[in-house]
Image (cartoon, rainbow, N blue to C red; front, side):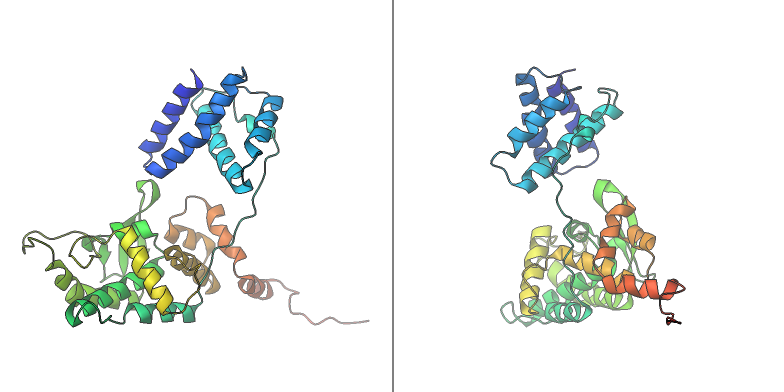
Length: 317
């Protein structure tokens, strides 16, 4: 099988696993030129030699940022591992090649006081939309922030949430994450109260603004925009960035920061790492472990509590 044919199969397998169009473009843009380079060099894409791979790495690194090189190599290695699993190639030839590594960036985290300011800003009606719509939007935005922080949701999961997915009686929300994998997240009392207020007084007001709205034609989306349609990921980003500025939070605070903060605060409160992994919907525990590096205070506290000689006073000379 040619390299291009293998790449087409690889991309189809990614699409079957619900990879986004952006991801597919990224992989095609990384693996395609690599395969063409090997073909021009007369190399077998299934068994390129170390010399050929080093030559390609030198060519790839010329004039490109280290992060770009690392991202492209990650895509190429993913392609080779897939080809090995499919029996198309013997293995990952890059496994024996030293490639550039990037230090893992620690995720930004907002402390609990900052979260409170953000929630307060989101729940304050703005004057430009009129008192009725302003109150409805404030109820929605407060519920949005409370839910994002309470459950550690991705922005795509917030946008895809439906009214039927929220079980306020049991404090649960069923969401569909990456790879169309469903999981149940938990909602604390503040999030449940905010959602209840929004569903009772805010959402009906927004739903009534939908063109051609009828009582028998509901919109399943939980969070609605000011026209009564589903509030998409772009709209969520816009609203949360607006409230971030109102709350005086740094520019690097994004919607995903609420997810990072949820995980860090859970661990700070003593939650087990595997519980946080389950709530976040991470396939690998290694993905969740990045949060253990965010809070040295939590690690020190755990060490002092667990190690038999962590707090023992020294004796003797």
